[in-house]
Amino acid sequence: MIEEESAQETANEDLVVEKDEWIYLFGSDDLRLLHQLGYSCADMYLEERMAVDYPGFKLWELGDYRLHMPQTPSVKAAKEAMHWEGARIATGGRYGFSLIERELIVIYKYLGDYTIVRPAKRTPCMILVELYELSLIAAVVLSGTQLFLSSPLTFCIAALLVTVVVFLLHILR
Image (cartoon, rainbow, N blue to C red; front, side, top):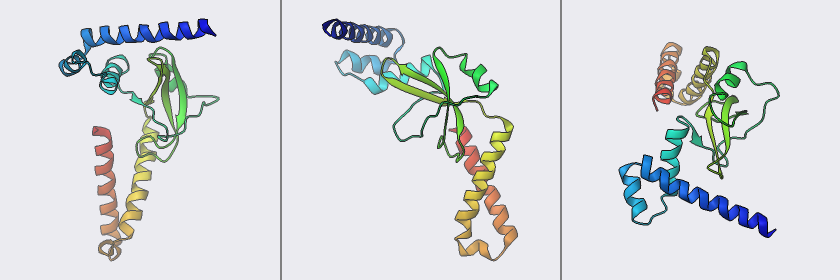
């Protein structure tokens, strides 16, 4: 019991030394300044470190979506996961605006405590499904307005425009 606590304390001390060293070597000027002033800056450190170590990943937060381990992931996702040390493939819904479950690349225990995720690259078919989902959402929203009930053609054009705009915003963010 005492040996386990001692090992945990040593591991925590190693993370603190590593954090200090990383901030000094790679941290932004703002992060270095705040750290020198004695602030923990845990969130800023995590954000900057993740951007360097695992670009495109984000912190998984409880309630974002549920992660499920697929029995047979796609070969494309498996090949992509091979580029990241310790990466696993999971499926999860609610990533972005998609209503369908997507394959996600997951890193558990990042910096000892965090789970980080990023969506696996989408296939053209997945993009079409997301566009279809958006058009359904736009149709439901627009069907509630009196303006578009009078002309089905106007309604369809407006739904398509809303879909394209939302999809482009999603890609550009």
